[in-house]
Amino acid sequence: MSPPLIDQFFRISRARSLDVPLALDRLAAPVIWMHCDQPRAAQLLSALSETLLQRAPGFSVLLSHPEGAEDLPELSGRVCMALPADEPEMVNRLLARHSVSAVLIVAQDIPTGMITALGRAAIPVILAEADAPRFASRWGRVPGFTRSVLAHISSVCLPNEAARAAWREAGIADAALITCGRLSATPVALSCNESEREELAENFRHRTVWLAAGVPEREEEAVRAAHREALRESHRLALILHPADPMRGPVLRDMFSEQFITALRSKDDQITPETQVYIADTDGERGLWYRLAVACFQGGTLGGEGACYSPMEAAGLGCAIVHGRMFGRFAEPFDLLREARATRMIQSADALGSAICTALRPEQAADQAHRAWQVISSGSEATDTVINAVLAAAARAEAG
Image (cartoon, rainbow, N blue to C red; front, side):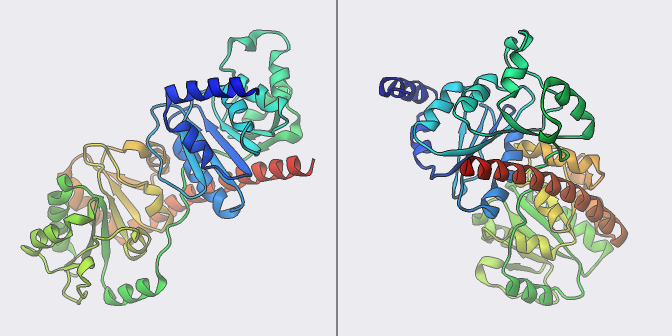
C-alpha cells in the first residue's frame, strides 16, 4: 500500500475511532488477529485470546469486533477495537505495519473482502462457529465466487459434525475440516494465594460458606435479607460479601453489623467461629472467594445493567450458582449454563434466601457443580482445538 493511501486510511480510521492508530501501534510482532461479526461473540474471543496468550506468550493479539460489543478488559499483549464486519482496507492497514501470523474469524457471514485480502498476502485464515458457508456479500451468488474465496481458508473449526457436509460441498477439503464443538466464553481459572486460602479455610473450618460476588449497592439489602433467612436453616452459615465497589466496605460493615457479627477484609479483621459476615472489600481476590464458597450469588443480576462478572468464573471453581434475570454482557455464558441446568435462576430479590438455602444443600450443590463442569470441559476442549489450529497455521506460515 502506498504512503498516500496509508495516510488516507489513517484519516478514515480516525473518523471512525480516534483510538485506532494508537491501539495498532501497541501491537508487538508476531500478531494473531481474531475477528468476529457479532457483539456477543466478542466475549468468546476475549476468553479464547486470554488462553492463547497464556499458552503462547510470544504472540500478541488484535481482537476486532463490531460496534455495540461490551468493553473488554485490558489485557497485556492484547489490543481490542471496534471494526465493521468486513473491512478489507483494515487488512492492508495492519499488514503495512505488523507481521500477522494467522487470522481467526468467528462469523456467521463470511467476510469475503477481508479473507480475499488476507489470501493475497498469504496469511492463513481459520474460521470457527460457522454452521455453513454463508457470505456477507451478494457476490456469493456469482458462479465460482464461493470456491475462489474459500480457497484462501486454511481450516474450518466446525461447531458439530453435521456441518461438515455443507463445507465439503462448498469446496473445503475434508482434511481442513475440524470438528471441535461450540466455543464458550470460559475464562482462564482465577488464581489465588494458596497460603491465604489455607488460612481462611482453617478459619471457616466446619462451616458452610456462601458468596455474594460483585454486589452493587441496590442489591445489598437483598443479600442481607437472604443471609438472615439462610441462617435460620443453618445457624453456622457464613457469608462472604464481595461488593461491586470495594470503597463501600466500611459502610457495609456498619450496615451488616446491625444484625450480624461482621469482619472487614481491608482492615485485616480476624475471622472467628462467631463471624457471620466477611466483607471482602478488595480487588483481585475473586479466585480466593470462589474456592472457599459452596454457592455463589451473581451480583448485578437482579436489575440494572446485569451481572458484574461472568458466571464461568464461579462454575470453573466449583460454586453452585444462583442469579437473577439480568445477564448484561454475559448473556452467552449464562445461557450455556442454564441450558445445562447448571444454575438456579430467581425472578425477584425476595427469592434469594430460599434459593441460596437450596443451592447449599450437598446434593444440589454437587449436581450443579457437576453440570457446570461439563459445560466448562466442553468449552475448554473446543477452545484448545481452535487454539491448536491457529498456532499450527501460524507455525506453517512461519516455516513456509
